[in-house]
Structure formats: structure tokens, C-alpha cells
Image (cartoon, rainbow, N blue to C red; front, side, top):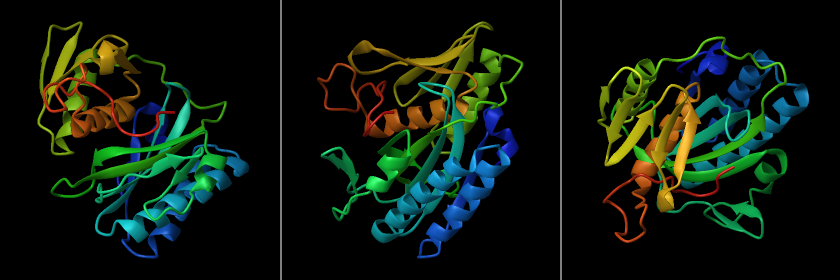
Length: 254
């Protein structure tokens, strides 16, 4: 396990390695229930989170095998939400959307996830707990944060945020370089330049549209950078990937 529930409002994350067998879903249910209860979620939302993570963990066990991880963090954009993500090392087939329902690799509907969550999706990613980083995919869902969710009373300095982003990417096996002039820092990884400004992380996405995340949303920004690098999205759409990975690819965005 990594992280504490009490750190979630301040940019932290909770990480668990799940058993790659039928016990994994039970483990996921238990830790999500305990974590959500500790940070003040209502019982009804805790129940929704337990139902949804059970489905994702079961799906990962049935179709992936090997490394399975559970990640939880909070984000403030596009809405104030808890993000619950299940990672596995099989990226051969991503869940697809048909008729408004999320389907797993065998075609069984994961409608329960769509029914209880405020958002859900799947994208290419990398492990966070393996000694040697594993490439794979992350299936995730979101739930609204409690109204009394703590708000940090301070701002994160761009230089500190840049260093933390570099460390987060290094833990995923991605080598990043960074520079700073004090007010603004730049983190470069895999052809993607991330501008770390006084308030936000930002980078150029598809069709030149900028993607922005508040500095407090370090976990969300790092995951989206990993997603962009793994997807190899070309902003111009002309190279077929691999020339300038400055987009956000993957499945459904909430």
C-alpha cells in the first residue's frame, strides 16, 4: 500500500496491489469502503464506490492476470471528484462503449459502473507499484466529493510542483527533464512539454487545444501525462503517433 486517506485532499493518492485472483475484488471492496468512510463520504456513495470497484477488479482478474493495482485520488477539474482506478497489464483490448454501456473484453456489460458513477472510462497507462514499471491500461470511475471536502489553504510553487511531477513520472519509468525560471517551470517527457505555471499544469492537446489541471491535482495531471505518452497522440493527426505526444488519448473523458 502507498499513501494515506488523509492526504487525498492535499494532492496525495492511495495505492494498493490487488491479488491477481478471485480474492482481488474483495480486497478492493474493503479498502475503498474504508478509505471513503475515513474521508467523510456518505454511506450511499460509499456503497456506490464499493459496487463499482468490485466490477472493475473482477473484470481485471478475469481478463488480465498478472499485475493488478488499485489507485484512488481526488481531483478538482472538470469537477470535484474522487477518482478510483483499477490498473492491469493487458492492453490488448480496451473496454468499448456500445449503446451507452461500458462493455468488457468478453462483451458482458459493466452497466453497474455507468449507473452509479458520475463518470467512467479506460485508457492506456503504466503501473505505479511494480519494481519494474509495467505497461497496461487503467479502467476508472469517479464519484462527487463530499461538500465539506477540505481545501488546502496554500498555493503550490511551480518549481515544487514541477519537481513532484518529475518524481511521479520517474516512478512510472518515464524519464523527464525540467527547467525553471522561478515563475514558470517546464517538464519535458517523451516529446511532450508540460508548462507548470503559478496555478496550473498545461500542455497542448489534440488540434492545439490546451489541457489544464490545477497544481493541487498532481495525481490527475501525472496520470493524464502518462496516458498521453502511452497513446502517442499527434496533435496534428498527420503522423500516426510518435512524433509529438502532446495530446490526451484513451477512452471516455468525464
